[in-house]
Image (cartoon, rainbow, N blue to C red; front, side, top):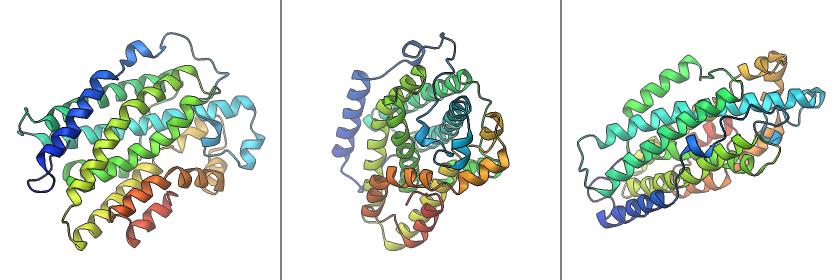
Length: 302
């Protein structure tokens, strides 16, 4: 991914991390075309995600829904999260390619960057096929968010890029760790989640290391700006995970569903508890400023 500037971190340390990640990738990587059961028809007796992660779980509307409606909603929500994941993975890939343009291909970090891009390409195809099998349309963030993402991928660099990547990956990671162990979730979805969790753990490690390395020696103003940029990017990523159209596609009253989801304290609590470790890391890196916290609170991450 993004190369560390001269003097920011010892080159040998960077090379060691990259080599370990490359070794891990050789030892434990998956081919979704072979690992995931794409051929068995969708069994609608399963959820698409753990019910407790549904945006309506814990609301009066959830209690009124039939088990079939609840399962359909979680399938649509899981597909929306997957689609948002594809959108962000495409942003990530473009930032990586831009940052490594014309750099030394013999550098282990360069080779790891290409490995990560290959992982993300497979993940995006896997998510796309999974969403289609769940019977969902192509969910996308709204136009404003799409254009903000276009701007972010073009200008973000260094710690700002890495920390934003880390937030998106860690939030999704916590959800998927629950889903992949939940026998109520469709088996093929659990396999998808397991693949993503295993392979993304390497990406998150590199993002954390790069964030810390890039911040070494940075001044107060730079950290304030970084913190705000990361928080704003994180807000739009997280709030775009579940598209409002999932409710109508699950046969629900969209207006009521959106209203109850917005006020759902259970879901807010799930999001906050899942991000405790992430917020601790951002705080230790000096990226949890007062202005940044406003956006994280709005996104129910803190």
